[in-house]
Image (tube, rainbow, N blue to C red):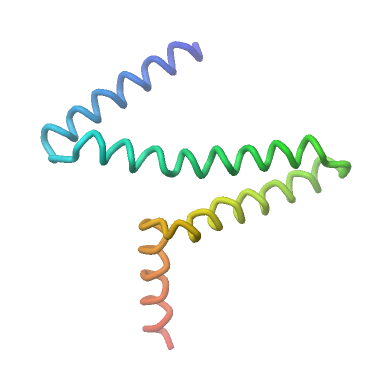
Amino acid sequence: IAIGAVISMLTYVLYGMYAMKKFARYSLREQLKDCLTPCAYAFLMALVVILIEIGSKFSVFVTMVIQVIAGMIIYFGVSWLVRDRTLMALVRFLQDIFSKKG
């Protein structure tokens, strides 16, 4: 079932990428860049989380809390360091919301 789900999802993604290229003028290069960048962040985050699990001497609950916090810090930290455009758009959006309230 899992292999079938992966094949099905890949087929859907490839068809979707083709349709976006053809109808929305969204090039394959742009699509891959938009997909691979967050995947790279997530891979780095997963690596750190796995290393925490391997090296942790705490209970499962404490380890999980540490992993969640570390994962968030890694993901947002890397996004901030490379000035990810999606994160920067979110920051500007939140600044606009909070500046209107004050």
